[in-house]
Image 1: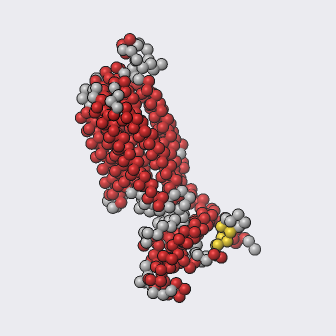
Image 2 (image 1 turned 60 degrees about the vertical axis):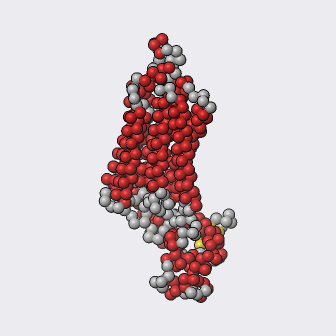
Image 3 (image 1 turned 180 degrees about the horizontal axis):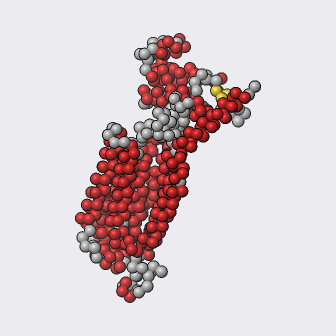
Amino acid sequence: MADSQAHGDHHGNLFPIYMSIAGALAVCTAASFIVNQMVGGHVLTAMVGFLLILSVAIIKAFLVGYIFMHLKWDWNLLYFIIIPAFVLGLMMVIILLPDTVIGPSRDAAEAIAISNEFTKELTEKP
Amino acid sequence: MTQAAAHDPSHSPMGMPLPNGKLAMWLFLVTEIMFFTALIGTYLILRSSVPHDHPVIKWPTPHDVHLSEPAGAINTFVLILSSLTVVLAHYAATKGNFKNATMYILVTTLLGFVFMGIKAWEYKEKISHDILPGKVGELVPGMGLNREKQFHQVGMQYVERVRGQLTHYEEKLTKMVETDTGKALANVTHADIENKKITKGTKAAYLLLTKLKPEGVINKDAQQVVTSYDSPLSPAEIGGAVNDLMHDNPDIHLSPAIPFGNMWASCYFAMTGFHALHVLGGIVIFGVISLIGLMGKLGPQHTNMLEVTGLYWHFVDIVWIFLFPLLYLV
């Protein structure tokens, strides 16, 4: 459409921006791989490694969305669609917090309860 | 309404200055965000409910399940590069350079194939090691009686499956034991097996051959479902023996025993499988566009389409950006 051709022209020379963002993404990927190796080699704790790797992933996703998906220019036209999806995502995380937080201890208690039942059965049988 | 300006935009005072196709693609993408959020959220729940500090009852490490982190990292680079080429294709189209656009789309399609190729290799690794949902043993030595009782049914299924698989390797394992101990299998004693010179793999082979193989050991009900077994080995010990055997002899392929292995396999195949299907869809579309371009028919009327398929492809890339660390790294 003539519309989008004009659309593209308005933003000047995007080629160097695209290339530098791609370079940044590659660096981020290499960084998260290195952090993973460091966690494996016990230079970093698992929690620190997890937070670093997740932060890098969020930065990468942001860069792809902002520049490659043209949200830098189209955000005002699209935010009303995109924001609700993230609100729903956040709601899902909050709703599931009880399961993520108490999971291991709940399962351990459940396992002990089950084993107690088994033991009761075995000892009560004549 | 979002009327695309089919005519000059300045003559349409109504609607958004956004092509229909772009808005529609974004609407589709946010539904896909919810779809993958559900899958990834489920994985996070399941994974976080597994103890962290138990020496044996823990989520499988990439090494346990034959997962190659470098393969995942290469796939990440491949997708990032393909995102770059697809956005450059659209950029070339906006500048009127449709030859370059065709070239970039061809490269994108090719990179998509590379991604699928590496994924196919990874899946082959899993399948050849029998790391599939429902096929992995859940019990290994050191898990405790509580857990063994919890996983009783699964343990029975696993024992039966390993018994069936062992028939293929009977000759090989017998030879292994006889070579290592220097005696015929029937004459091997407990003392020979406990000898320090005997490898773990040979010991495991002996245990499996003598304690698991005999027909009368397994009890089945009327429906041929295994109910119990009279072997002196528990499913956990059998799992441990199988792991030892395969560790020393990589050419023997039995179902491994990996705690939470079935859960891991379900999550892995669900997430990467759906992602791979999305990549496949993208490849098909890019293939069609490549053909249009190779026939010389790519023109200004396709600029929107290039942007919109680029949006889809970037979304696929973003999903992988999250899948890679969650499955391979942490």
